[in-house]
Length: 202
Image (cartoon, rainbow, N blue to C red; front, side, top):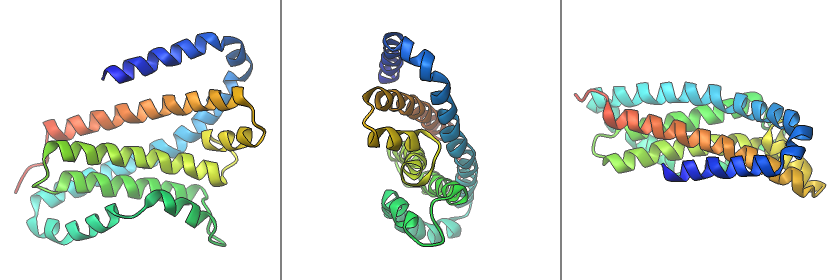
């Protein structure tokens, strides 16, 4: 938990040093932070609910666990971040809002159900899978914005990288870091919830 405190202190220091820049660009930055948050939060919550429910069902019914485990292991092995550019270049598909929503919810469901539903996993591995699912879901959003969206932190990072504006790149990197800290806190809370109150065993 100490690293989270250090990150908050770093963010506060950067905000103080760049207060003039924040006065000029803060509103636009918060607007794009809101776009990214709105793309990540709803499918994350949906995927978390589905993943927990599916994991609970796997814990209750051994037959369901035996049938789903090979599928989940196969899906866990997929290179999800490479799917983003692949989907983006497919004609008539692209990374629109529905595709991003589906991918985030799917990733969250797969990782959480795999973490909760498999009985023989140690608690440390279970927590690591939960955290990986949260991180991957947010990365799907940021990379999707980087490749195909006109709004959001990833889209702004692409825009200012093309024009090589160091101040704006640093600003949107800090906002991305703040969103990443929020994701880490959510993952930590969910992992603790799972370890303290595991689904009922059959």
